[in-house]
Amino acid sequence: MGAKSVGPLQYASRMEPQVCVRASEAQDGPQTFRVIKADAQTPEEVGPSERSLRRRKGPTKTKELGSAVVPQDPLNWFGILVPHSLRQAQASFRDGLQLAADIASLQTRINWGQSQLRGLQKKLKELDPGPA
Image (cartoon, rainbow, N blue to C red):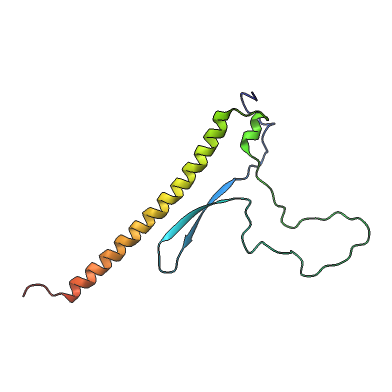
């Protein structure tokens, strides 16, 4: 059923994250949090790296400028036949991470709404002098 423990030979010396949490802020609204895959390219990275094409003479090795490292799935450290409980735990962790980002977005929306409400109540108090 796979390896019972993980040794230093089974995982890479440099580990890359599989997902990232990004915060994006609207100009007049609250901040939102999104969970995206780490290997997903942003729109700035899409497209050819060179502006023109050129013909090469003979077979040469092409060198990639931005070496795209695909993150390795940590479940593969345990071999090919990974216990189902580990796959369930990984899926639960990903779901939990998505829920945490959703909760953080909702919390910032609530805080933003409360601050807007306080500002409007303050303006209302300034406009209404009260009983004289």
